Image (cartoon, rainbow, N blue to C red; front, side):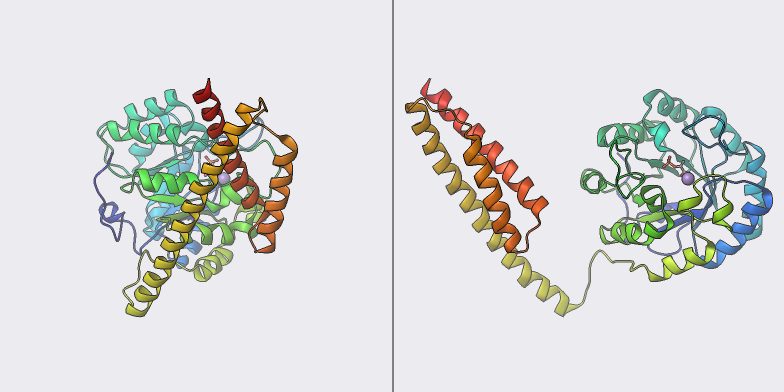
Length: 364
Ligand code: PEP
Ligand code: MN
């Protein structure tokens, strides 16, 4: 979809990243010239790469602070002059794009509520046709990797070369500790399908709580994300949007200091040898697992044929309940989590039913 990246630094052509990871930080919203420039002046000391601020805010309900609009662009220009930090703004309409390009905004991001809408994405792609500006595309609010990639593809087709994606979590109908539940398998799948697209994490919008930001950011780095976008405000408790999740500049400095920026590989010979030995053990363990599963399915097939012959139904709820409980117990006794055992046996049972159905059909 995009050009193959340099393995060590996927942002090589962006010319804005000083370290191995892209660090974007700044307030959820620009609220006043003093708040924005004051925040920027402090964040410079955290060694961030890009200053963020929203000026058109996609709020859930009307009547809440919806951003300061176009006047904020001049404040961002001043923050940039004073700190030499490149600046990034959220755009949701062609009008926003035009205003940002006029004002010399360095990067753009597209919010979750815009990525979800193909009409909006196409309008943005059309407005950006032929413009060489980096764009960060947040995941859509629902966990749909193809919709997310569709948004990226619309921009790529418009000729944009510097595109990254941002995992900011997904809306969920059930209460949980996160404001937007992360689905780590989705950004991992994104990396597998498109290794050329840098993947960034926004731990602020996943957490919804400044106290969780560090742990989520660390998890992203452990999964080899290429950067972080973190909300920081000179006085978070007074923020007009997302007050609970924003870090003060001091807190951001501490978080960035404590984070372990994991490397993709190590050249250390002892590490490499030990890892190879352990991986051989894993390969053997996997062979045993696969052989056991194949053996189990052979027995399942035999039972299937026997049930068919005796006119007995495939599903035996009592037996299934007993298997599930006893296997979960056995797993938990060996330090495997209940959740994992339940999912594993659900999957094995579903496959066993398919196998027995196939036996029934063969005998028809
Ligand atoms: C934001 O970054 O302030 C924002 C509105 O993000 P999202 O689109 O992830 O909700
Ligand atoms: Mn926000």
